Image (cartoon, rainbow, N blue to C red):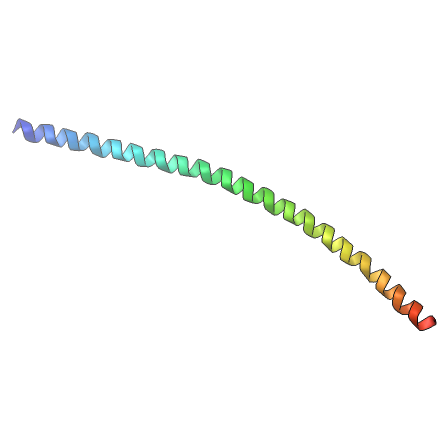
Length: 75
């Protein structure tokens, strides 16, 4: 009977250690994901800035096109 109790205690300890290990892995995963998401957000912000710059360049071309068309009709 005592060997059954010892086996049960060993199983309980193994179960607790596996639970702790799983919890530790989850916490590590959460930290890594937080870092990854910060990097993704930073890249999205950089892309947004580049897109705004490109949009301003496009808007700058429109007056040039209108002026060219008007100049072509006048000449």
